[in-house]
Length: 442
Image (cartoon, rainbow, N blue to C red; front, side):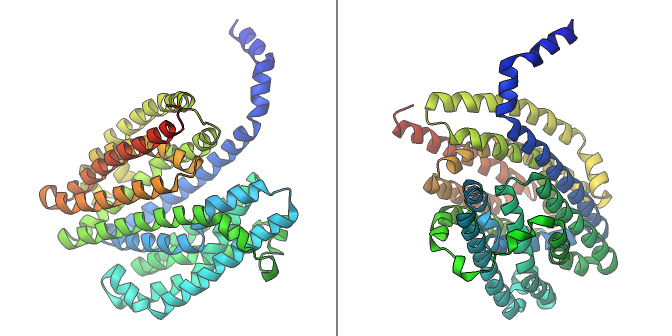
């Protein structure tokens, strides 16, 4: 009887129509799941290697380098992500405009990469002193300066393939990047310890650059017009300015906040405690990647089409109805299994991190709810609201950490994380409500 009902349901015209209309979403979701899966597994292997060979103190220094690399790459690559995907997608059938976009992005990105790379080489000792509290790691900054163009190239290629909806090739390139980085990181850590771990963060993309040239296959033709100066377009730059501003602002302010908090922990409690906090952040990034990617993958396209308050509420209610139980189940399991997870993915040395889980999970739960709402900022280009909300959250996170660390110790930092995201959720909700109120749809 159940089989008969299923067959009738599949033959239903409405079901077939719905399946046809969402075929691209189903296809892209499938490939996105592969990319996320490979990235997560590769990241966990690297994570385990870092923990085993470097310990909490090494983790803290790697965290500083990671945040600094994110700030730098926001100017050279990551800042172009949303704009590149959108405009390449819009003009995928217009060969002339598509070539202009590709050439402009490559020239702009790599131009900044060489410029910033030169500055890093010139002031490597200064940056080393800021990041690592010693000038002994100036060679790491020099390697970052040299490797920056390669890192930028890899990311821009990924964004272009995403915009062109070359999902199979996107899986290949992303997988090569993730697996290549993991292999190089593990080998460098085993061979050279902390110095190898720091260098591997940058050397991975350099080695993967060569592999990606082969992995691109027939899509290498995209690079033919990449560096033709006559195709450079200031109109393309103007169109991407808003996305560039939002991305650079968010990446920079978040990375600087994490750098300041990590250095605050080192100053007040020591590098070992900073390593525990960094380990908690890395674990958080792994289990959040599935939920955060879902807000971009499903919610953003839906919100882009909604202009009425009632429809918006219905859509968000549906999303929250699904996501909240999933978060509660997932986070409860993570909390109950926290000691097991620390032993498997890190080591016995990191067991004190267990005291951070409760407030970190509360903060992460609130963050997913808030980020779902923030997709409205991207959908409707609410730039001012985006800048204000991210600014207030980062300031409150650091300010509360500065106060709480003296009262609660390291746990005070994760309490600050939870409270700052509660503030974030309230402010974002207010902006979204007033957006629809102004449109007289509330």
